[in-house]
Length: 194
Ligand code: SF4
Image (cartoon, rainbow, N blue to C red; front, side):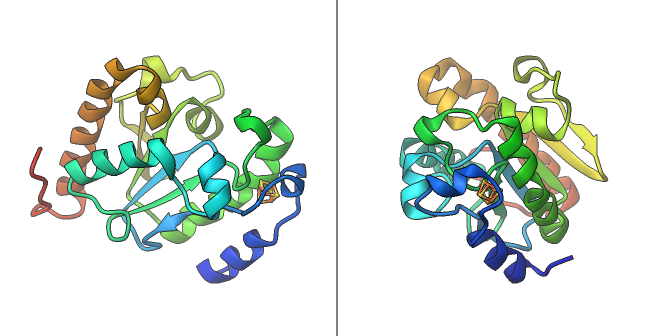
């Protein structure tokens, strides 16, 4: 298996699927490559494609608020990546060919980061990694044992922007993650809000 930097250099020039033809930047993922928590979402959007950095724009701001309230910082506690590393045009969902081409990179990232906890943001990440028939509305908030890791599915921040009533369940899910992080990683983990 590649080391982290070798994998990154490979992905940054990848042309394995047609999304390479329309992207501006490959969005490899950001954060601490030794983090105990990994966040996984669907794919880059407009601002991520422009910058090459995960979770920019309003979704990124909202995610940062949630992480800060949980006592987590992007640089220290987490690594964030996506099912596909290049933006699908017009923010459509990635198709099966694109997901199949890109998923091996994500699996390598998971092995290399080796997180104890994985947070799945939204239905696409849940369906691709856990169960194609799973419904985020039914399964969010429940811990799943997956490949010796604990997985917490919750809503994507963009869903919260469309429907603010989802903020409360997502906050409950993150409080759950904080409790698990204290149990598995650091009993002294500080969060001002939970
Ligand atoms: S989406 Fe993934 S497989 Fe497709 S070109 Fe980008 S990095 Fe390669």
